[in-house]
Length: 222
Image 1: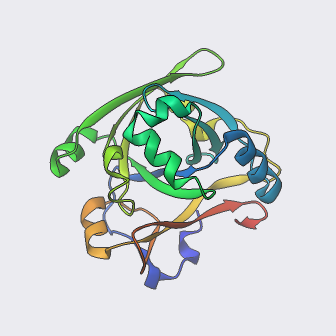
Image 2: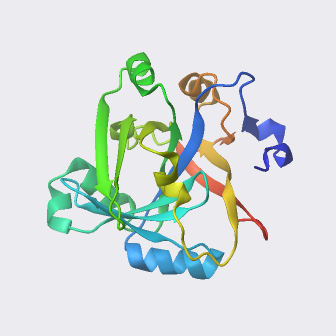
């Protein structure tokens, strides 16, 4: 939504249709509950408990937006996190406050994407509060600390209605999805990474990483 309103000089898009699409962005936070309350009060966006990541010492909350979502990610077990590279990284980057640390695009060709870029495939799952198990495969998440401007890839296994973006949260506005992601990085390298994908990303100058995210709502853009 909202792509026609973006400045074409700062929006990278490819002409051909592919299976790539924007899936979610990751916001590292010092405290999950506090972050959920703050986002609700400041932006009118509700969130839901997600789950824990065994071995990382981290946990998440989900801000569902329809087809996309924002993942709030924090250390929930400091001792476990201290023994994990991912846990130590999240602890470090969130120490001074909320910070976008990664963004993700979905694909139904995750094996081909992983092979093309030499990425290891990882599997994940978590149990949902009402019983079903959410399962996925990802590629490239282990590289986001080193290359925060490049997205990692995900493929969801299961019915579309279990996608985190479709969960029901008590929003005070009506979100219509992520309109754009602003990333500082190398335009050509990002274009190569996304291939033929039609992804609403703005490329700007600066230290590599996600700089901002625009969310469409019934009251305008956040």
